[in-house]
Image (cartoon, rainbow, N blue to C red; front, side):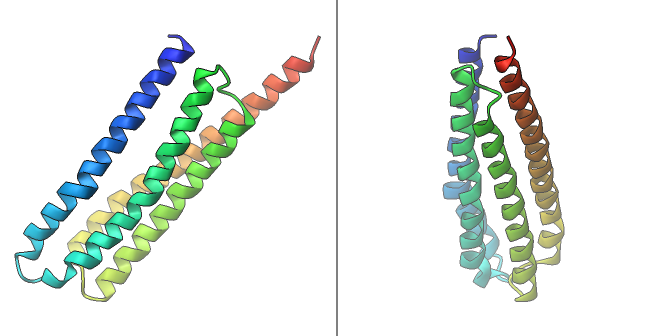
Length: 158
């Protein structure tokens, strides 16, 4: 597969992820929240939870922007460059920060009585996924950095 085709696929996947994420955050979460708030017990928790979840979306969209830039470098046949290694480090930092924010926010909402213990328990799955993304991006960043250094060394060799 050519670099341009690979980059096109990556950009398509990133765009699709952005559209699906927007649908979830703009339509599904408010809809489900209203359904849950109508139940009565957590009716005052609708807006705190919705705002909290919207805030967790911001780093996710920043990651999509970095992914788009990485796909652009792949398209230019410059996959293994220091810029991509730094971008992947930023993706790892964003994922780790969002995970910590999500975990702390869940604990805070639980402590304030705005959450259910079952929701806090299920959020551990999201926290685990965030940690997995952060570790995977860190490892990939390290490998891209090593490959960029090797590529630079080989370009200097006659």
